[in-house]
Image (cartoon, rainbow, N blue to C red; front, top):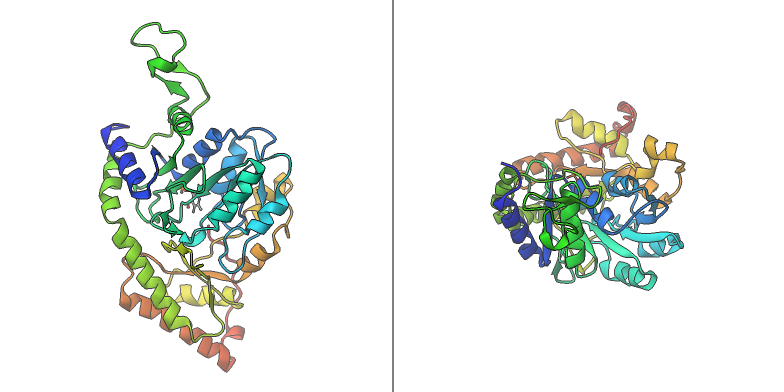
Length: 367
Ligand SMILES: Cc1ncc(COP(=O)(O)O)c(C=O)c1O
C-alpha cells in the first residue's frame, strides 16, 4: 500500500524516459523541491536565485532549509529567468540557482549552467511545468545542464499521480541524500550504519520527512507515463492552433519559444493590456481563463519577510497583462473554437468602444 516495487518501477521508467541515471519519487513537487534543496546543502544564510514568475513552492523550498530566496527578473519574451539578471544577483552567499521552465518552455540552460560553473553553484531545474519538453535535443530531466531536476505529478500536470513528484539526478551521492531525506533521514543500509546492533537496527542520520509516494500512486504514474508523448503532442497541437488563429489580433501577444527549446505547453499564456476586463469577460462565458503568476515576492508572506515590490519590473509588467487560456489534452476543437470566438468578440467590442466601459474591473490572482 505504501512505498513498494511499483515506486521503484515508476522511478526507473521516468529516469529512462528523461535520460537521467537516478530518480527518487516523493509525494509532491513541493517535497521534491525541498529534498533537492536539502541535497544541495542549502542552509541558514545561503542565497538561492530563482524566478519571480513561478508557483510559490519554488522559493518556499529555500525557506524550508533556512536559506534566502533571491529573485532575478525575467526575459519578457519567454517569461523565463534571464541569465543576465541571474549574474547581477550573485553574491558571496549564493549557493544555488533554481531556474523554472515556465509554461513548459525550457530556460536557457546552457548559459545558466555556464554561470553556475563559473561561480561554483548548484543548479536545480524546476521542471514541474516541463515534463516532455526538450532543450537542444536533450529531454528535460536528463540533468545534462544541472545537478537535479524536479517534477510534479499534481492533477493539472502532464502526467498525474493525484499528488506526487520526483527528483532526477546523475550523481550517486545526491541520490543517496535524496533517498534518506524521503524517509525521515533513516537508513537501513548496512554499509552506512555505524554501529550495527542486529537485523532490526536502523539509524536516523539526518532530519528527514515522510515524503514517500505510495505504490498505488506509482501504478497510476506508470500507466500515465505511457500516454505522456500523446498528451504532449495534443498540447502542442492546441498551442499551434492558438498561435495561428490569434496571429491577426494585434492586441494579443503570445510568449515566444526559442529555437533550441521544445515546449511541452503546460500553459498557453497571452498578454493583453486589457487583461482585467478580458479575464472577467471569459469567465462570464464559463471559460476558466487564469493568471500565472503574481510575482512570488509580492505575496503578503514575502512582503512581511522584507521583500519589496518593484524588485523585478519586467515580471510585474508581465503580471499586469498575462492571461492563461484553457490548455489540456482533452480540450476539443469545438471548445477551443469557443475560446477563440470569445476572444475575437471581446476585441471587436473593444474596437467599437462598447467593451472597456461596460465591464467592472476585477481584482484577480490565480496561483
Ligand atoms: C513551477 C512549480 N513548481 C513547483 C510546484 C509544486 O508542485 P506540487 O503541486 O506537486 O507540490 C508547482 C505546482 O503547481 C509548480 O507549478
